[in-house]
Image 1 (cartoon, rainbow, N blue to C red):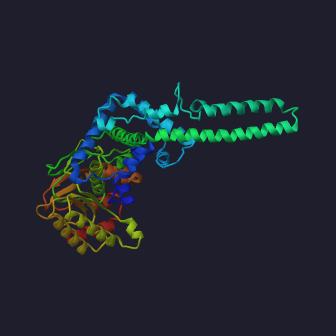
Image 2: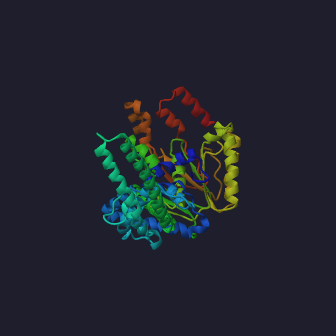
Image 3: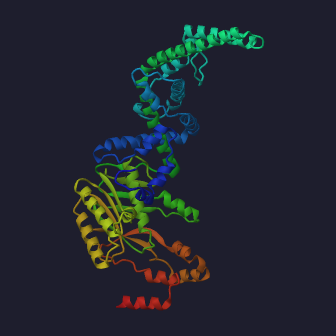
Length: 493
């Protein structure tokens, strides 16, 4: 699990969905995927090398689809051998035939990979396949090379002699079984048991000799496991980028802002597609300090925050991102605050859980630059105090060099110098046309309303009043007219 996030948070922003679509084929690649972490902000060079590698492989995949499929077929054949390598490293341990079979097939797969990846445009460190051909020679004496393994006669003259004598006695037993004298048959059976014991001893001696010879290839085999995991995960990243039509993040120290152009949240897009709707790409540019989104509760503010957080996390983990353009400086942390269901289940109130998380955020901010996305902080307390806390928090984070993006329904929390966004929502909607449509298809009123909702963001003055669509939306959705008139009277004062 990504450090700093709980499982439900990763689910909510769509990180889990994206990771599920990243599909390494080997146990080693899958382990690399499980171990995904944010690259340290101080090691942006390593992060950019990773992104370059994914980009080179992505370009290669676009023009070498058949070879990619051949590589994937080989990758699917790799099985887990790290337990076998652990046994190989133990002093005096003799590998059994299953262990030797696994090592042989692993080594053959590595030799099959060599010509397939030789043309990949990656740094030598990423495509230099460790030489394990010696393993094949040890485990496959003579030709042809096969994937099966057994302790062959060719390994030992003594073993071959024992097996020859044992086979002769077995034939004598078979041919003489019908009329053999009891004492003679007992003698043959006893001799066969002795030879079978000798055979087992000779086979163990052969396996001991093979194990000792394979110890010389242990380092190469361990390096090969690392290579397979690395290449498998890189290829999975590249194919994910291809599937998502993703772009390379621009991550540089001199990036002053967070820029996201025409970004898509794949999880939300997939959910909308099942309902016959299309995701509207999101564009936003954050400045250092406090950035605030105000707008209708149906206006998609939570989707914006989830998408901003998702792309920052993906980029800092070395993934391409689903956007036309994405740029940010290296981040020390990525933080996301929404409903804390886990803490509520543990006995904290929603507000209490939020306070605990905000305290953690302040600690992160004091020691590094990062991104914090806050979805309706302090919604779970009384409005007057909630608004004061929200305003104070925004003023506090403005002192630091990180990026904070907060959504809120409070009307007076955006201060001078803060960046203010609003969801367009229904500002430009023709309410008469919308009302007529909803009257015709009342059973689809909610879906119809969402089709008229403009989820794009626009930057507005810091002191722009928040949109007031709630009463009209409630009217369109059929709320009682008398109740609506009472609400309008309250708004008029």
